[in-house]
Image (cartoon, rainbow, N blue to C red):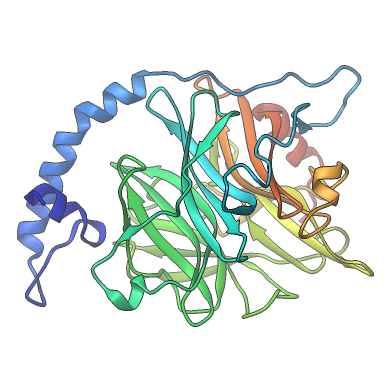
Length: 365
């Protein structure tokens, strides 16, 4: 293993030598690695893959509409899968890459990498991701599910619900979606729906999360946290909680927040408890750019709710669960990747300006 490879396998670029942290040397290595990758990153960003898109159907007035050929990933896309859903994708090189939740035929929850040329037709690796991790305590596997992926500075960060004496927020990163490095868990158990912001805020990394319990969590509020190094988290602030109607039981952050002139557009899931169980829908809110725990607008009606067969029928009926959203290079069109009925992956579309205006026009705080 080369020196550069060793350096990049450490937590957030820090090195540990015989139990001691050589911060000065690691800072130099980190800057060196960043500069070496800069040319590669610029070259990759200049490549524009085809954007997955379908216009709003004739006669449809919805601000968010579904892809006519949903679901795009069936439950049995690879031999070991019982279901594939609640997954995260990003533009990568001349196509797309992603981290996918795969529940196998033992019903073990784990994460797989996948690639696509067009963002619609996917090739998912048949075996789970093997994480590089220096700490066997953190590396010990219980389960991994519901990932999010975001590009920050010089790498792709992944967050997921990680089994560590109960659910918590696992963290890792990759440069190429081939080798993945696991970091420290962000929080103590119990927590889910950890979503990083795509840039630092006031010089700190920022994350949304939803404290929970060991089970199916019949409650849940969204909180905001900050970190100087992606290891030590604090400055915890309440963002928002459930309210009557379609989001009366619990809520949780969805895709990586999207920065707009109006604020951070946060798509999220909300849950109502009916006599037949939970129903998961998608909502929208706009958070303050500088103080993201301050909610500026919160849309009262849902944006999507389970109405199609692949959202109503599956391992967990009646679920729309958004995990990723990609904006086109012009910043106008939005494609949303969501899990249907805890079984398949589906697509939805929106125009960003229409969606932001809809949230504002229908806001109730």
